[in-house]
Picture 1 (cartoon, rainbow, N blue to C red):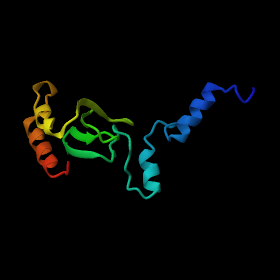
Picture 2 (tube, rainbow, N blue to C red):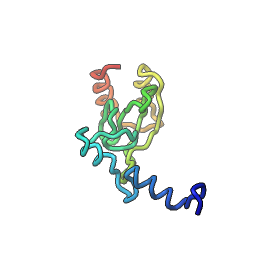
Picture 3 (spheres, helix red, strand yellow):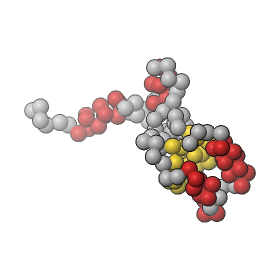
Picture 4 (cartoon, one colour):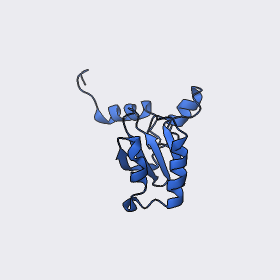
Length: 123
């Protein structure tokens, strides 16, 4: 095999191993803890995502990693990436309206908690 030819299986395995995902666990948190970062993650769907703005029950509001929009997420179960996006909001001023949309099915009590938490977070 020449240097230009590569085995795709080996390349994929080395990429996954380097990313800490080969064993199927979210090792991002472990590597963050080992570096003294307190277990934070840059993966938006991780339990340990660093930009969670508010959370109540199985609903949370995060900022995207580029800090250009808010993401409304629902917990979708366990696994490596347990949070699923249900809405993207470009303006903080629109969050109350989006949180109260009947189509999202967010309980009123959770909406109240989220809005209260967001009020205490700098924009």
